[in-house]
Image (tube, rainbow, N blue to C red; front, side, top):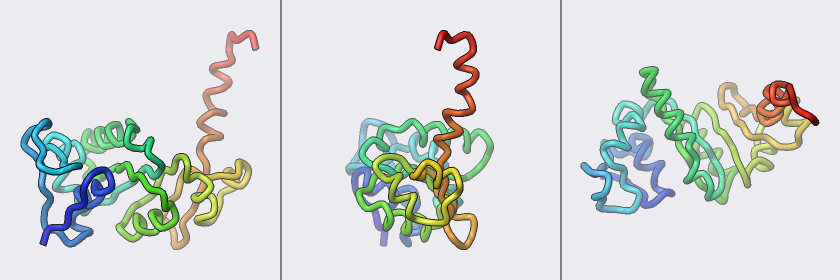
Length: 171
């Protein structure tokens, strides 16, 4: 039996097919010839590290419809391939954040990047860091320990480069 979901929602079943009990997934030989919505091309499947990555550790970006346009999966999967890691970084669109967090954890995700509109859901999901508490939302979930840890990296993403941007500024 081969289990395959369709469209963007089915991407998880196509990339993590072993977790769904499938021995393989289907890909198209060419980018512009696909037989089903969401089917990956051979080129795309290799960029995700298939078949080696199908059962390897993975990370995911969880958010609303905008995750479909994120450059993150392309960038991180390219870095993983360049470093010889069989990992995957997946974009997961959902309207049910907590149950999606649970599902991804159950499938073996190492951690999640969380974007709008699910940062508040992430904030309430696990043990909060002081940065998450200070900001009042979370954008990162780590499954490294027995309890998910949530934090917010936005503060440091702005604070660290801000002094450099302010040099020579008239503000």
